[in-house]
Length: 249
Image (cartoon, rainbow, N blue to C red; front, side):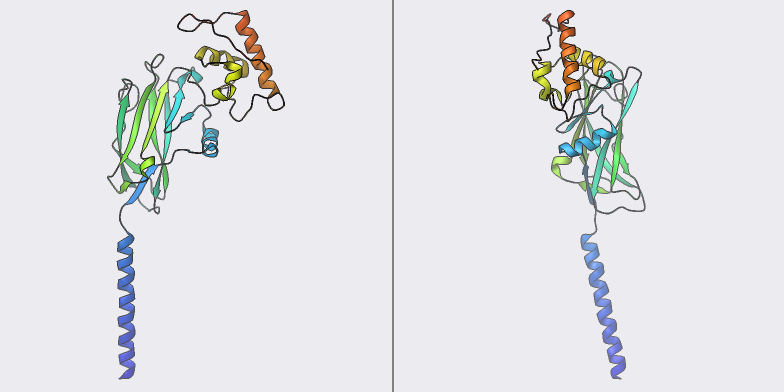
């Protein structure tokens, strides 16, 4: 009789533990949160730029210019998103709204973006892909804002990471490294940048380099060549003011 009693007691304890476990599981289950995963530190930006050196980061905005590629007619930019939670064996949905600036129009300057987006199965990070078309961007930068909203299988994540903007133009935008080299190049102007790219090659990227003869002798030599070019030939801005390269190194 005692043996039967102990078996029943153990059974009750087991069922109680299982019930508590299920209750705890239900307590912590529910919709995961999702937000954008844009770079915030110089290390993050450097890692991102290894994948695409033509992108420029400005706080919550990524900037791209078609001026770096004369052949391209469209460009897809990937915006990373991440969730707080675990991957699943099935696709999940999240919600994004779009805000348009500078006269930007869906299916004219960029491919219309569905409000319902998919986070792939087995993933805790994914990319929201935005395609821009090279149309009517030579004088005005086209820009859209993407905002994550509660919907589908996710709720809003970290408030500071719910908005991300993408700006695209056919204009040579000021690169992030320019200010560090302003004593050499002077005030930014696309003409200066264009001529610098012709001399230096690629996108003219000086990220991580300092205007110092010990660390950037090649770059400073080319800046002096650029200065000589602007002294021999005349380049003017929109107000008919002559552009100069003030480098004194």
